Amino acid sequence: MSASNLQHAAAVLRAGGVVAYATEAVFGLGCNPRNRRAVERLRRIKLRSTRKGFILIAAHPAQLAAYVTNFSPRALTSWPGPHTWLLPARIRIIPWVTGRSATVAVRVTAHTQAAALCRACGMAIVSTSANRAGQRPARSHRDVLRRFGRLIDYVLPGHVGGLSRPTAIADAATGRLVRPG
Image 1 (cartoon, rainbow, N blue to C red):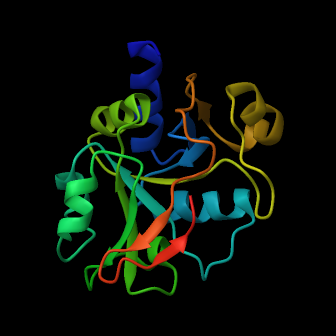
Image 2 (cartoon, rainbow, N blue to C red):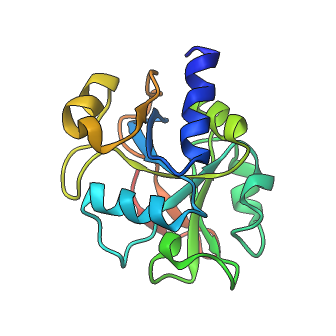
């Protein structure tokens, strides 16, 4: 991962673009969660229902503070790492990120490239697997280009981490597993 590629990806995100990047298990697609047009464009690219929310990833919990009412000790002690938690969403949180939920899925990633991208753009970013609804996620730069081509604005070269499946999602209040990893 070159610094110039990373800075370019961050600039694309800040400008409202959609970027693909490596995560713990698969390539992800991301955008600025505060940019409604970018999020809705990402939803169309993925053919994703408006009922479903998106995961937000960050380099550190402070980048997520604007989106959640409080951090569960379960979440804080598991981060950074491949642990996605449903936390209570702030009342004024943006509905195009949460879907129809009162919670928001968040993760402080330990994946080097994904965390560096969040640091470079100075914010948490939407992170969803690089696939269309019902399809297997892309696991390589080449696979992302083959599937999405010009539908996305940039693919940050990189390598996925060691997980074989996307991260599990658990409810931080109850510990209940919502999506197995």
